[in-house]
Length: 124
Image (cartoon, rainbow, N blue to C red; front, side, top):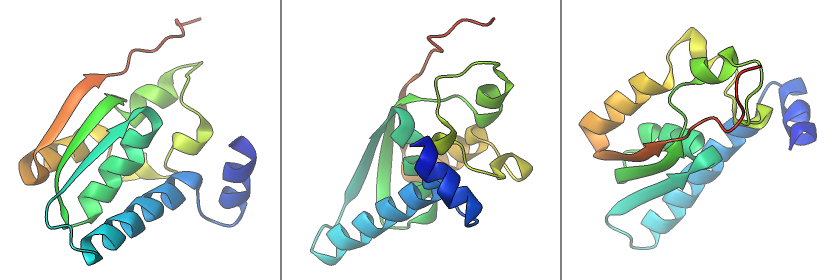
């Protein structure tokens, strides 16, 4: 995971961006094959690219996030976090953070967050 994300970063992309693209392509595929209403369900590390894909796609009617991180800022401020480098979206904090994305999704796509994940590693 770290290896492939490092390669993506060297080429100016990231694994997180590739995951968003994968989800968007899957959305295009299922809607092109007759799906009229699409509810996206994402968990853990998939919550970040799932939320971004739902934000970018007009074909997602609602989204549920299980074990989503509260914010990217909270992840990078920890000395030790269980979120891998590949879950981080390079440059995202220059423009926005997850709470703002969640607010837009609540207003436009019927976002349901089951619970925010608790950090299993205590502060050192």
